[in-house]
Length: 391
Image (cartoon, rainbow, N blue to C red; front, side):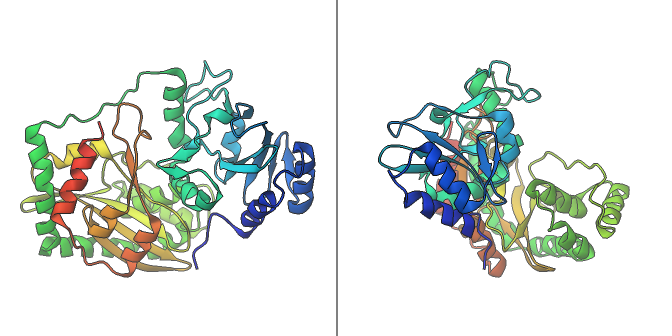
């Protein structure tokens, strides 16, 4: 059974709030909620182990009240942060983690990445995200998107959106020549996936996983998904052998303080050239009992990479269950199920960008059980055309 973001406690809270539509004013509903769920109060925030909530009130479904300061939201952004809007007729719940915030409002003129300022208003909360309604029935899926981005991943976007700072990045310009080469990447992927080189690459990665199997299992218990993923990535693809051994030693000794390490900020984690092919493989760990949507790629970076002759981009997924590695799978970015599960987040890499992608974690779990690396050429071309057209 998968571990859901929407735990029993949160489900019970959602039912409790819905059962009390129009019955109580704000203070009374807060008092009833604290009694029912044993919340701890932190100023205007009420929280438990599974989630945090801020109660607000309005005479209608539209509200512009100040909800929370950005600095305070940072403290709760790793768990579902919910705003409960109390109106005369109904109580509405919204996820208000940083992924679902358009911008920061009050006192935010000095907001910078190293100077967290300002507050979030009710009007700053997205009521629809990527065509998905921000309402309780979608909380599990929405938070699984946020969990992979996190506070730091949203901070640059919020700084830009709040202060109209000119973004430093740029969208890759696709001309007719690069477009043809990008489209040819589908044929390259089909041929490479059917080659002995593909099998050799899978074997090479599998051997590295086997070598650090115990350390990967230990690392899988790290709660922070970003640290967990980067650590496992470094065990497999890190270039500094001395640093790798220090990480291994820290994991084996159950040392909570890991040596400082930095992973490459590149498209893939593992580069390998074969005769006629230049491959990049992105290594992803999937904890199969967790509901999570792994990060995909920066769309401009992938288009730029695929515009280079002979390039092939792949994903290597490591499935981890409690106390064991369940399976590994190597697939092209165009593998039918993976391609169809690609979630496009248009503006999460800055305004001067086509955006970034994530994958539906349920599909990754299915790939780990069975994958035939099938690639539909026509549908893959349509997919690439849609990525190019985002600017």
